[in-house]
Image (cartoon, rainbow, N blue to C red; front, side):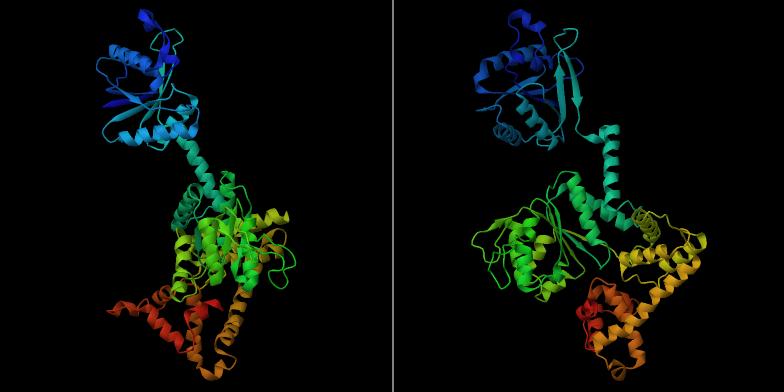
Length: 524
């Protein structure tokens, strides 16, 4: 069934009286006169003061199309130019009728009524409250009373050129979020596509998780810049590393303070939440934030209000929030170090960024990106010769290369080799020196790590055999998101033979032999 929804045009539809009215274009009547389109049901929305005109128009519609059922619908407007009122009335009309496009075809006429009413019909159609195709009518150049009409379907998939244009824009947005790097990892590309949709459509908090150096800070800034390009934020990007905030300093830095509120508070300070008003607040390492600050942050997120230290009056800041962490926040909640209600609030959109070791197919395009970035910064074009590039890729793609520093580590290596390159070319000797250099700190750090974890006399307390194994276990823990994740990697074979698998418990007991736990190992 074809169903038409139209507003009575109090001026256009009133043209013509007597027999002569059939020679004048009247949009509501003209739509019933076309032979190539037929409406089985015609809802004519009118205001009470135009009841007489409505009756005349209904009669003429029935004369022009006897098979059309015309249903007058009285929808009163106190002020037809008041957007809020008109939209509300038309919205109520759509809800009352409960139009559904499953079985019927709907057409919404947007030529008659005030400009405000036409805009409201458009918006209701776009939001699918009034489903269907828009109908735009106009008088015929030849003076024919039927005039002409155009059908406009807001489903952009039917307009190839428009769809292509929007797809190109979206592709540009995805490339922007990836810093223009042609990444190859399928899971990562899907992750970025989801983040792009969320960034454009939502103002709710975003939580970025993943190991240190995985690119959380850079992605957060890119999300901000994408939102700003789309005019979704007007304020600044405020970047805060929560690991640097402690005690009164943390409260003051985030929420501000009044002069004299504590020792050293010699002047008012607005705080970083206030600085983020209208923009985005990025709280990196949010797992390091104290419980008191977490409680105040939760209220600021939900109510957009907070109380600076020493203040009697609340401040207001409407900001969007992005959080970053390399910690297991769910585990921190279980240990009482993180508020469950805050995690629930910031975990609406949670995205886990994989480390470089889990995206080895993206190493080569990232090398090209780092070289191009170095060129832009230094003004000198640097490339690998073929032999050197193969050697570095062999090293980079090897499973023995853990990439614990992730993209920061890759960046540092490229910068060093590019700086030492002679004649703009990185040669094999430079690559070999860099690989050797990168492996030395790992060996030296092993001993420093064990001193920090076990004490200076650790060689007298444990066998060398035990220490060799412990070093590898520590490496796995530091490249894993959780205790369970590390356990799965370490016991990948033996766990298959067990009826009841508890990798976390096995790993915890192993670490406890050395007086360690997962949190201590991964924090050092």
